[in-house]
Image (cartoon, rainbow, N blue to C red; front, side, top):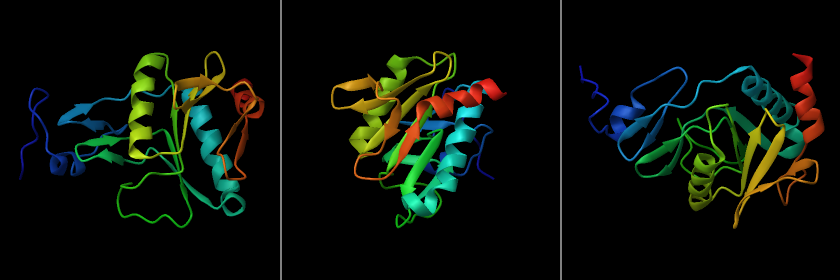
Length: 177
């Protein structure tokens, strides 16, 4: 039986992939990074997006995966809150090619600055659409070549696809709970 490194030791990719946590953790250059625990608002937005993409998957030609490990670099695995792939994109246990959409939902402990860095990593990996949702002030951002940009148009879109997420409908879910 392999021993699990303590928090001071660096992990190997193999050790990370053989481990599991609830909620899952990310792997960054040999270190295990905890993700902020989800809270009610975070969970509601995650549920809404997952359900919406499930309902529209045939129409939009996509598959949706909440919290799926995504290998963005040789020694980096991220766990987006919601990940959307094209229906034809196949993979084994975890994502190794850029998905269509990566969504991160902020928890109160998360900062936009940290999310900016993670979004830049997703873009370097080749993710075309990177969305950041902040439930508390009810704001949505998309990552562009100039950084995180607040969405003003009232909907998140994936360019070149029929995908549209109406922000007022998504945020209205917060009032129902």
